[in-house]
Length: 234
Image (cartoon, rainbow, N blue to C red; front, top):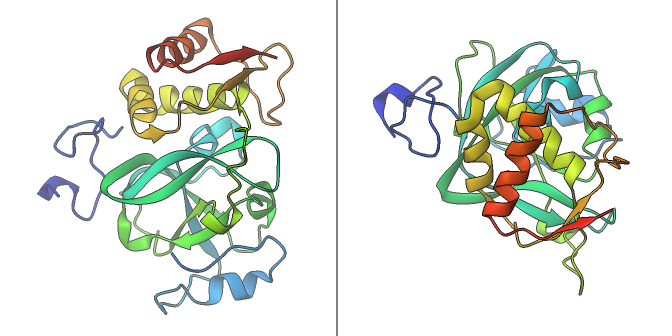
């Protein structure tokens, strides 16, 4: 890892030398918060007032949440992957361990008493990734990532679709935070684009859908075409 990236946040597009930024404790939304934040899997004490979450999908779009304290960050040793969950008939964006990869995104400061994010991410489990996140925040002592566990995955005989309205939200977030290089990095560092996409723009199924500019929509459409992803009309 380059020296400029140690102990802080660098800015890159998939190249760790670029100047552009592009676990073990399971989550349960209904678990008592004091249990969730009392100890990390490493045995380190948790901050009882605020903890941070690394966002790599819809959480990068600030319009989907009400957490104002956010910072650009990079999670090393992980990669994105579209993954089906047994809990709902759609394919989710998840993070999976990959020693040779990294993900650019945001870290969000979340009050420890706030259960809204756990409820929003109920299909996922929390994992402590504090030592793998590089960022400029001075007070982010504890950082979790939401990921779907293999035990919760259900590949099934037919893949559930990816909602285009969800992809749009993610693309808008990366474009607003990191520009077109950030959008490129999102598509290039995510596996599973052979999963069909359901075009639901006319009637969005994603509950936190947002209105995109024509340019943002075109970015999404161009990348899906470049990756030869099958887009089905809703």
